[in-house]
Amino acid sequence: MKIQKVNFGIAGEKIVKYQEKYRKDYNKRNGTISFKRVYQVGTKVQWRKHKSKNQRGKKTDLLWYPRDGHVVISKIDSKFRKVVLVDSNQGNPIPELKKENSEVSWERIRLFHHKIIKQK
Image (cartoon, rainbow, N blue to C red; front, side, top):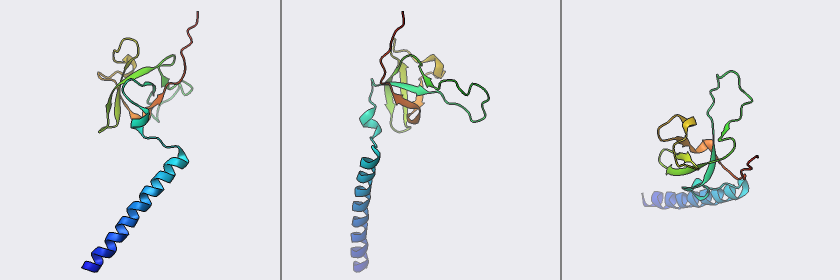
């Protein structure tokens, strides 16, 4: 049993080291950044409207909302991978989401980088 523990212990350590090295190389190669480093409370984002695969019509409709602005993250739920969004001006829930707390999945948001240009 001692030999088995020694051998498998060494193999396990080598596997862990290899996985860490592979993870670092992969993140460096693909430019992967963790969610917590990019998104915090107060970050300006846009959210994507969920469409069913069976939906007909309006295929060319824009999916990212709000179209002319942004919303703000008010709460991040790491356990369920959701964020709570509020309107950037008033801090109210967003009516388009039709939910009481305006929860959106992490996969359905993107950073808002554009400046809003108001037309006269």
